[in-house]
Image 1 (cartoon, rainbow, N blue to C red):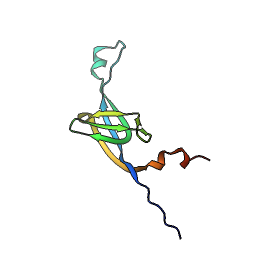
Image 2 (tube, rainbow, N blue to C red; image 1 turned 180 degrees about the horizontal axis):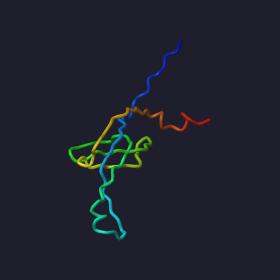
Image 3 (spheres, helix red, strand yellow; image 1 turned 90 degrees about the horizontal axis):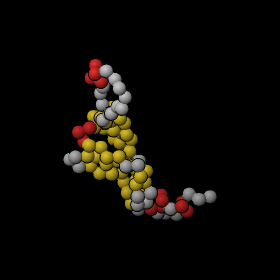
Image 4 (cartoon, rainbow, N blue to C red; image 1 turned 45 degrees about the horizontal axis):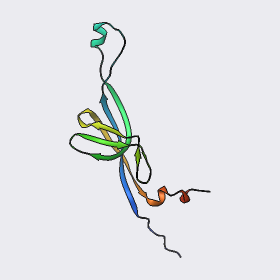
Length: 102
């Protein structure tokens, strides 16, 4: 019976759902009373955590072997809810065409 080779993990990322407050602006005319009722928007992002520090969380939604796409940087004070929903590990083979071609 053959031995299965363990592939080397090159990246590991945690996946999160994040609810956060965003600014709103309007370019229409409205009454002062109606404008006083306006509120910021609650937004939702689902992505992989690239990094975080005391100021912000940096998420991405797409990845290739050594690049990310669809980056979203959210200021920590704007995050109202955050939930870890999983973890993913990538190997070099995950990004090689030969792994998937017909």
